[in-house]
Length: 288
Image: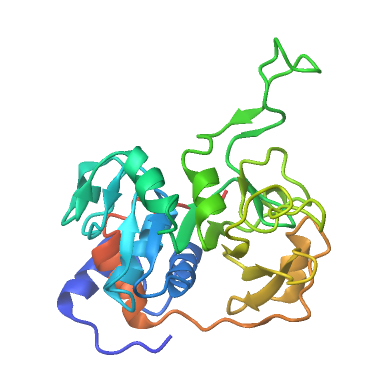
C-alpha cells in the first residue's frame, strides 16, 4: 500500500490504537472489498454489523448517491456514527424516511426497489445459501427427532431471507473458515444464490428475483457458476494462495479462474478508521 504524508490527527489516532498506516486487518480488507460491490445510485438493504462498515465506506467514496435501507424502516440515512443495530437512533441521521419494517419490506423491497442486499451469516454452502439461525439442528430437545436441541442458536433471519429473495444482487460477507463454508448448510435461512442444482434452484421454487450474488470472505470473492450455480473463487485477496482457499472450504471449490484482487488504498483504510468506525467496535474484532 502506497502511504503519502500522514497528517497529525491520523498519526495520533494510529498511535493511540496501535495501528500502522501501511498495514490493514482482514476485516478492513473485507469491508473495502464489499464496498467496491455497491454501485452508486443503488438502493441497498444493509444488515447491522460488518455490512454497515462497507455501506459507510461506499457512501464516503464512490457511491455518494446510494440509498441505504435498514430493516427497521429507516430509508436514506447518512452513516456518520456506526450504529449498534438497525434500530439505533444513530442510524437515522439525515434519513429521508423513518418508518417501520412494513414500509421497508412492503413498500420498498416488494415493489422492486432493492437493487442490492448486504448480509452476514454463520454458514454459507456451495450454492450461496446462508445460515444465520442455528447449528446442530433447529427444534428444541423436547420435540427434536434425536432428543437434542441446537448446539448454538443465532439471531435468526431478521430480514435476511426477504432481502435475498427480493434483491437483484446479494452480497454476503464472512470470515473464511472450513466450518463456515460446508457443502450444505445445517439450516437454510437465506437463499442467497441459486439455492440448489437445476430442478431445485430458486426459480423452480418460486423466487423469481435475484440469484446474482457474490460471497466475500477474508480470503477471496466467490461467485456462482452460470451453469451449475456452484460458487467458485473469482478473486483472491493479496497474499492468499489457491491452496488456502481449498483448505478452508467444505467442497471442492474451483480456484482455476481466480485472479488477484487489488489492495485497498491508503485513503480507503484511513476513512474506515477515522470516519466509519473510529472506536473500532467492529474493525477491532479478532479471528477466533
